[in-house]
Length: 336
Ligand code: NAD
Ligand code: UFG
View 1 (cartoon, protein in one colour):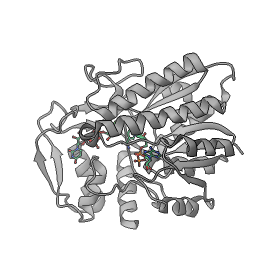
View 2 (cartoon, helix red, strand yellow; view 1 turned 180 degrees about the horizontal axis):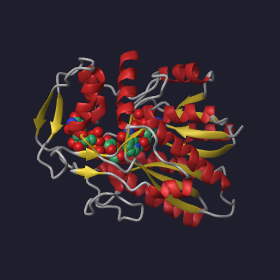
View 3 (cartoon, protein in one colour; view 1 turned 60 degrees about the horizontal axis):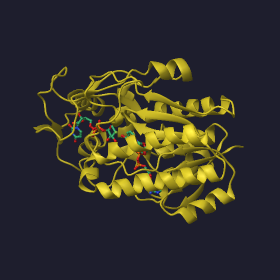
View 4 (cartoon, protein in one colour; view 1 turned 90 degrees about the vertical axis):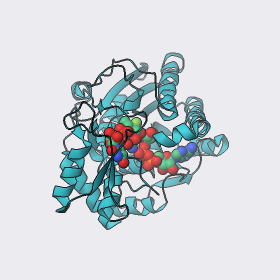
């Protein structure tokens, strides 16, 4: 069975990736410093799959300890999820974001080169697109002019990976996620950030379970269908299916080819904040309270993708509806 290194594998998206890898016959090995996750996730992965994956509590910035993992295993490929990801916090603590995300990634890439494992699937983000263009975003659109240090770290690492393709024969699938939501169908793993959530659906869920009083809607006078912000929400299980297809793409490619292949992972349609609140009310059978607040700095009115390249090249298309994703998040929140 092929060993896959999963950085950030106890996190929200990474844990779903680990489950899917096990179910597809791979052996995932997790490296995570638990800065935004907990060991409990490992028990839940075991409940779902029957297997407790090998786990190393290591910070990617710790080169020596990270190297000990490369010494122990022969890796077929790396799925690189580990990242500090709070957009707002990144403006308050830019140096932490540069150090954690860039230094951590550099250590990882250097060890990949040294131990001759050059296949990587990178978790990039819609935030790398230059907002001068209106959506839908296509893979060939301009990137850059990022509006926060989080986005800058994604943009910089995309460019460093391009260099490693050109000069060190890396094979890179660069996945630009739109807005991941939802939870595993067992409702044992999902997204439940500590403290007050930054993202919309986890915030709505905290209101639903009574931990927060009302949803704050960041502005209702955008030029969108109902004035509130629109996003391309994608179920985390669809997103992870995209990773399996990407892994297959890398594995099928010739050993002596190297590439930086970009794919958007989104549904191609946009849902507004008010629609998200309305759908949640319908699912739980009662009203979800909200109030209108000023615009959040750096927010785009609308962001959604053109997902056709992933369909044509990878044979991947999002299948799960936004309502089902909200239902899964709700069930996960009730069960946790
Ligand atoms: P998450 O915070 O749940 O998971 C990230 C994991 O990485 C956490 O378990 C954290 O403990 C770990 N980590 C952070 N820094 C580390 C370090 N230096 N060394 C070792 N481990 C470290 O986040 P997520 O939502 O699962 O995101 C996964 C990836 O997807 C990230 O790269 C993120 O930027 C990207 N992404 C997420 C979204 C989203 O909305 N969730 C959107 C676009 C892209
Ligand atoms: N929103 C609210 N109230 C909230 C939170 C969000 O009204 O409490 C609105 C925002 O203004 C926006 C929409 O809900 O219109 C979605 O906001 P999120 O914070 O959930 O998501 P973003 O699109 O701002 O950013 C997310 C991730 C980034 C990632 C990006 C693209 O946080 O890491 O998607 O993938 F880069």
